Length: 182
Image (cartoon, rainbow, N blue to C red):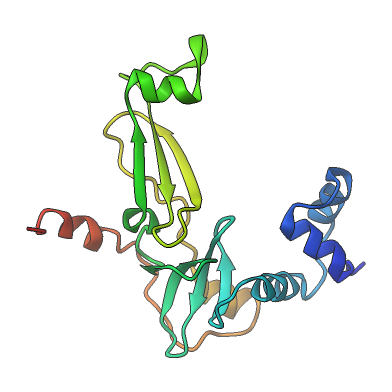
């Protein structure tokens, strides 16, 4: 059964009762559902570039006119090539002291600062909190999701993209430049 557009809009915006959200999410995906969700997301943002895939509450992989694919916040800020961990281009706040951890987890709930730090990733354009990691101190920044967009669009959706990109994590290009900045 195809869902009504208003149901999908409410699902995307989080304004739907959990019982209906669960039914929509759990149901067999009707043909065209992905495209309908992308259409709804495209209507919500101010930029014109084509959304290829949402990757977070405010983040999308978009395709520019020339076929370049970048991660973009709904405010319009671009984080660069989608094959590079967008977090490395965000503003990062690390909570690694007792006082900062206490702010979030008062009393006995606070993690041991020697075992855990909390990293908050913010958009440089609008200051939206985009992601949070709780990791051991010194742990590399986590790259949660690197989709094979070419395979997804060509093999699953049967709609090849303008350009083919090598499916590879290029985050090292960002981290390699850290030591070279003067």
